[in-house]
Length: 136
Image 1 (spheres, helix red, strand yellow):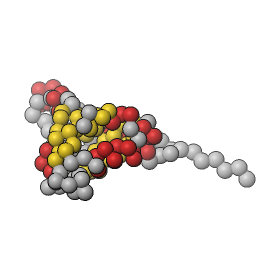
Image 2: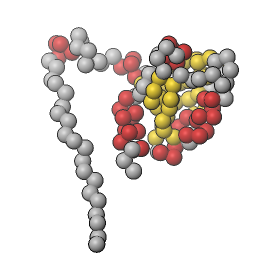
Image 3: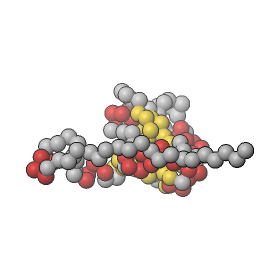
């Protein structure tokens, strides 16, 4: 018996509500301030390398995409610095994170007490990680 599996498309999502141009400036769902998406440098300091980072990451070159912050612990130093879910980690201590696999990236983060991070908020790229990692 020959069984074939068919990958179904994702469920239909209706488009977001249309917002008239004159209301966009004041609508919480419409943000055209591009500074939100510019790279920013953050410095996270820990007393000991064993102390918690305060955030989780997903990604790596073995998955063919960059590293993203997937969770931030409320009240952590990371949260206080403004690290947020959907931030892409571009560099840590001048190491280009686009060239690392997951294990290498975790090592860089875990074994440093001062972590200088170049990040940018990139929610679209972050959502793509779920499309790619969870449907193999």
